[in-house]
Length: 228
Image (cartoon, rainbow, N blue to C red; front, side):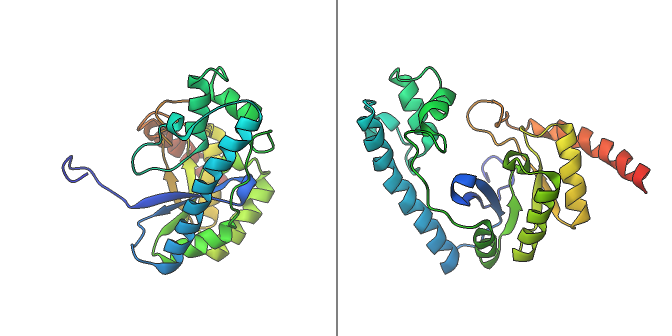
């Protein structure tokens, strides 16, 4: 980042609540916090152990994927998208999405439950590490407005500091709704492309959300003015 003269923020995205998949973003983490290190080590160990469980489960279904087939990048760990890509590359499915829909998604035949840590615990641990905890893409939680608001109140009591308002999976009305929620509870507003190699329903191109953020902010400002 220094070589390219761009800003850099130490951050992480942690998957909480097991199959419920509540993602918590943590910005500006301070290194060396024991509680944070212990949490990450537990999640890391769980991810490593699930690799073998997934491969064995698929083998029982006559789908033969090896660790080498996963092509895990150096410095990284096993993930379901890597497994889905390997299944596609070997011809077991036609697309990565099909791999999730038929085998790897929660509740599907090959799914292996992950270590479940509550969102409240993750938020509190991030706070101990001096980080800024933010709830990621709340639209993907598929909660009613009232239920989401209840969760935001609970998570704020645990230390939640922001909401990821702008995300490729959010439409303009979603962005306005989440922005108003952030303002109501005095939470920071964040956004991002959630870039994952190529754009799809849940991941955008780098920088994709900037113009949407700007346009939605203008519309919401008008909405706020009309309310007041």
